[in-house]
Length: 126
Image (cartoon, rainbow, N blue to C red; front, top):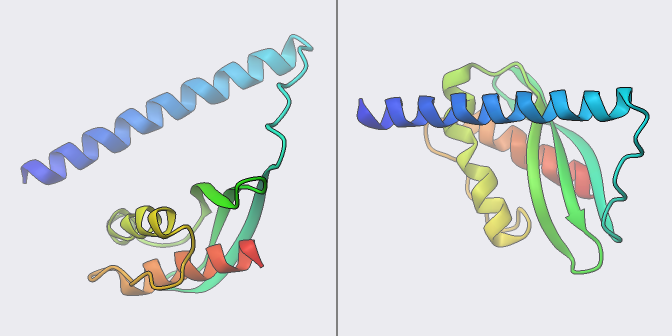
């Protein structure tokens, strides 16, 4: 029960932080300020993959071309249940640690959803 409460608190905190960032971006765009230049070699790739219980899962993979590393992975679109997605997001840490999907196992209890994330990351990096 405590683990669920902590997880929910972290998700809510992340949502609040994300909504604040979105608001700041909107304000700078409205003020006509130029967007900061992306780091050289840092690219964002979009991929989608089947295998999710609810269908296609779409991710944005930020990849550092200069150093050959995956910087971040964000699920941008899905039709999974909140419960399944919460469990499956652990696979993102595994992919980041392995710097790819090779050898990364699906998450027990969210097998289809984590498979969809793995497939989407592979699609993004093709």
